[in-house]
Each structure stands twice: as C-alpha cells, then as structure tokens.
Length: 243
Image (cartoon, one colour):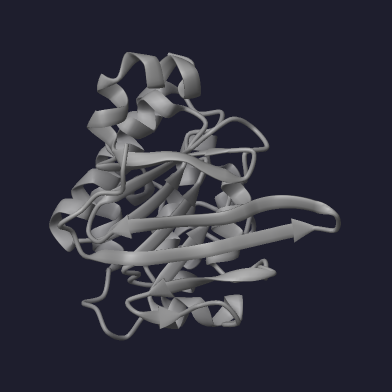
C-alpha cells in the first residue's frame, strides 16, 4: 500500500521521531493526511498512536522531524495556540467540566475559535447530536458516557477547526452510540470539508468511515493507503488488524 495520491494534503509529516527517555515511541514517521477526509491511525496498544496525536497538537516535542499543516511548520508551536491554526484535539478520556452545563461547556469551545472559517454554532452541534439538545441545561456530570463523548467532540467543533484530532472516541461505548458519533463525523466531512485524524483501537469501525488509513507498528509506519485497500486485502487485515 502507498500513500493516497491526487489529493491535497492537509497535514504532512516527515522524519518524526519522539522519545521518552531512552525509549523511541515514534521513529522516522512519514505520512500525509488528505484534506477533507477521515484518516484512521491504526495499530496495537503501544504502537505510538496517541503519541502521534499528542505530538501533532504540540503536547509533545519531537527530537527530530517536521509537521506541516497547510504548508506551515507546527513543531515548536505551543499547544494552546493550535486552535488559532485551525486544529482541535479531543484526547481520550471524555474530559468535560463536570459542574458546568452542556451549553456552558460548548460555549467554552468557541473562545479560541479559528477565525478563518464559518463558525460552528450551538444549533449546529445540537443538530449533530440531538441528545445534547435535550440536555443543554443539564450539568455535564449527569451525562452518560456517550453523551460526554458527544459533548467533548461538540466543544472541539465550536472552535471551528479545519483539522480535528480524535483519540479513541469509541472506547467503552455501545455500538449504537459509536455509530451515531461516526455518522456525525461523516456528515461533517461531507458538509464542511473537515479533515479528521482518527486514532482507533476498533479498526473495523474506523475503516467504515476512513478514506485513508495508516497502520503503526512499534512506532513506525507499517503501511498506509486507502481505507478500502486495507479492508479488501484479507492478508493485511489478518496481519495487522486481527479481523
């Protein structure tokens, strides 16, 4: 499998190396993320998936390599300034401000809004996630796990990103909730041209919406190409994804 061609890259990564002390978490990672599509980052636990997202968003500093978004270098840009570059990162864990209402949490997301794109409104988020509309005045600590995941994604979208990084959004959720979240992401990509980088342990679910896929193995890119290539190649599926 090879990188997707003929599509403009939203994100280009070259020679990215990240270490935790003597341990190399990512080694010379090279990949391209197509604009206006979902790219799934797949691999076993410890493959470096979360480290990759944290490095892209500025939470970790690589020892070598380049990350370019829209042609602009991101290495060295503080994490708190990434939203002004058009990036939102939803880490694993469904972090909400428990004492604040759903609507208050969502409004926080707009504070660092990317100024170059048409804004995402509260009504837009409520249309995507109707269960949040029904609970807009409820405090976040009363939400179910699925509703919290919808809330943190909605809050990230309120910043009007052009690039959304999602780390394990399906973790611990019922299949029906996962389907609702992934359907909303698919609609966002189609309607707004959003670029999504999706880290997922559930390869089957991720590949159901991903146009592009990258498989990490022990901190290195084992293969990358279109999602359909990976799904259709039984040998590759068994070797890297276990289904």
